[in-house]
Length: 261
Image (cartoon, rainbow, N blue to C red):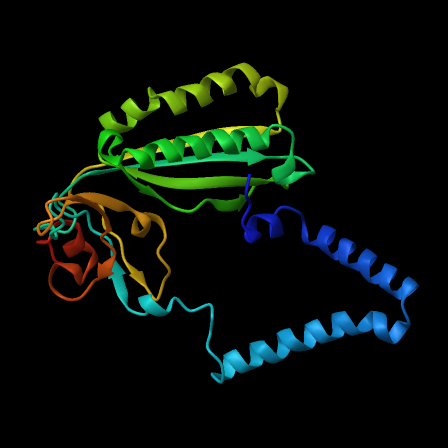
C-alpha cells in the first residue's frame, strides 16, 4: 500500500511525533558534541521561518497557491460529444460516499487495514477501467477525518451517472470479491469499520463552484466523450471557468433559468 505523505503525517497524534523527535534529538546530544547535535534542528527551524516570511511578504512564489485556478471555476457534466450542456445541472448525478475507519494505536498499519485498502483500490481501478459500462464519472482523493475515539476515517466521494449503474457495479467482480472477504473476516478486526452514503440527485438540483481552489470532489471527475475531429473516444475533464451567463450564480448553474433571490 503506497501512502502519500499527509496520510503518514496524520496517522499518529502530534504528541507521538513530538516524543519521537525528542528521542532522536536526545540520542544526537548523547553521541555528538552539543553544539553539533543542536545545529540540524536550529537550521531547519530557521529555514522554515525565513521561507514563511519571504512567502508572506511576496518575495518568493507561494507553492500552496492553486495558480492555474485563481478564478471562479465550475465542473458541469458535458454532452456525449464534449460540448457544454444547454443548462448547468440538466443531468442527474449519483453521489456515493464511502469510507473506512481505523480505531487502533497503529492507525493505517492496524491489522487488516492493508487488505481493506487493497480491495478499495481494486474497486476504483475496475470502475476507472470501464467508465462507460459502470457509469463511473470519477472520485475525490481520499480525505482523512478524525473520529471521536481518537482514530481516523478515510473517506472518498465518488460520482456516477445513475443508481442503476452504481448497483450494477456493486454486483461486479471487484466489489463482490471485497464484500465477500469483508463478510467473512470483519469480526476478526472490530477496530476497522466500513460505511457508505448514497445520494441520487435529480437534474436541476445540484451545482458546484470553486474560487482560488484546487480541484476537489466533482472537479476531479472525467468523462468519456466522442471527439468531433478524430471520431475517437477521449477522457476529458469538464473543469472550466465559471464566467458569466448560466455560470454566474448558484441557481443559474443548477438549471440555467432561475435567478437568485
